[in-house]
Length: 74
Image (tube, rainbow, N blue to C red; front, side, top):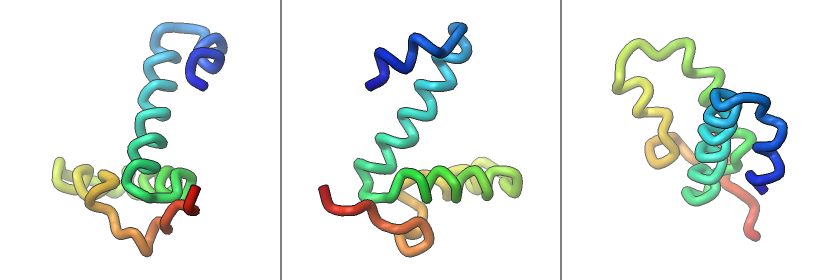
């Protein structure tokens, strides 16, 4: 999946940003979260973070499952 998407990154920084997004999505899936809802939740909460602990609370293994929803069984 990534190989074809990296063709459209346009720059090294764009490819790094894309890689970061993919890693967030895959980590959410591994932890049983709905990737879209997890991504929306962290993007809404990041502006309110003031400490490293606040950012740590947004990691997939710390976030509340009922808040983000569980991924559909594959």
